[in-house]
Image (cartoon, rainbow, N blue to C red; front, side):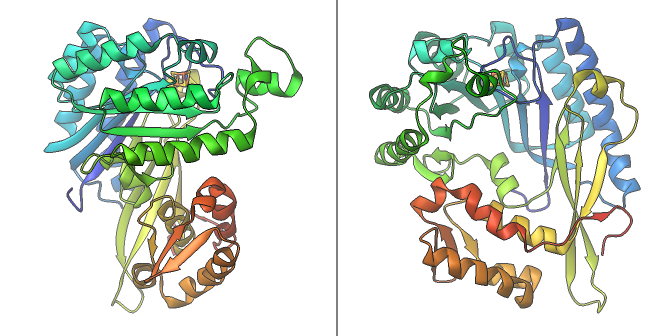
Length: 412
Ligand code: SF4
């Protein structure tokens, strides 16, 4: 991984059907919108360098990770996939060893799309399986069953793509401990080198969430397991995957040695990325000299686009942008770093933010160690197994440390 290279995230918000639990900025849109959307992405790619320069940030031109998420990017016509990657390669210097990932819903990878992504240099596929039990997959709105997933994995390997991730969700409607074990065992039997396991968090804006709030049986809300059961399923996943060689390296991510997602690591390690498309955000870094001229201070820039397709396609204003104060960066360093099993190294935070800032955070750490949610050994702070289950509560404790973000033009 290059130290000063950029990662690029591209959101492709098109789905064939909407899953019951999903509240992402994605939807079922007419194919006619696909080419308009890709045109817009290509324009934004060309405008990214000047946009960053206008804010005083030098956008790295070398890219070492690319991630097409969504949505279901493989629903794009092959020529649109080819145009998108062609534009990426002409605007940026894509490292020959770049990790290029595309998300895919099982059963939605036509031969033409598979040929186009292989031709474009895609080396990693993330499959949104969620469950290997056909009934659970169907009742959550997925259009696939286990046989389709296994066939997709076979086709991907035959096409030369072996860096494969499978997503599972603990807590789907109707899921039992026995069916969860079966999904985990099937995942292990497939031999994929990476897995992502999420505990179902039902958002009230999803169809399932609305049914849980107001009643009904259409989306099987009454069959969603209790929180305690979901937590036990997650703990089972950690042990079962570890015993099969898929070690946990982040709250939701597990991999064989050498297969951790390089793109996702850059979020947790706070390295720069450019987000393009609907609901995408960017984090760019600038290095400045401090007032005494001795230290270099990093300032982080964020932008987030709208989550509505029509507004996105018609918008002419640049995305909302803010400088993050050093306090906000310090706060992020905690709640992003703690996601990783490798934890947060205190000496490195002290070098970056100064001892006084970190001393305030260490008071929070001390209390969370007493509460059994963190450990603090050999200068490294990590979540305990219970802390991982309650990670949102732990992160909340670090939020009070930061001052408000500053407006652009006042990066101090
Ligand atoms: S495929 Fe993914 S993005 Fe699309 S509706 Fe399902 S969960 Fe949401």
